[in-house]
Structures are given as structure tokens and as C-alpha cells.
Length: 93
Image 1 (cartoon, rainbow, N blue to C red):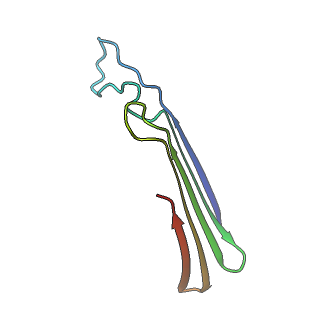
Image 2: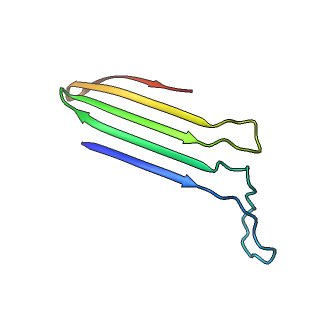
């Protein structure tokens, strides 16, 4: 089985018109990341191997000391028999 996905978010902060009935708070520029994306892949490989990979990116917040974030999670699993799976994984911080 192979699955994959991709999600991308673009946000433009703006304030509402003074006569707006929208009850949500304004989101001024710099309070939220302008770009975010997320990619996930899961593969069944030959020889009873499985591979999972996730990559995430969040743009910096211009009104904060936080910089952009890029993270990677990876896992390789092996199922030698039906009820046993061995795996090794890693993650960036």
C-alpha cells in the first residue's frame, strides 16, 4: 500500500471592516505564519519493509523571535512474521 499527502496553507493577515459582524479576532500581519506545508508518505516496500516519512514547514513569525521551522520524521519497519514488527525511526527537533 502506498499513501501520500500534501497540505499547503497560504495566509494573508488583514483586519476586518469596522462594520463587520464577524466575531473572530483580527489576525494582524506577523501574528500567524504566512506559509505552512506538510508532506506525508507511507510505503510498503519489498521484503516486508515499510517506510514512513513526514516533512513539515512553518514560516517565521515576523512579530516574534521564532524563526522558520523545518522538521523531518522518518521510520523504517520490518515485519518478518505477522505478529512481529521491528522498526527504527528518527526525528529532527
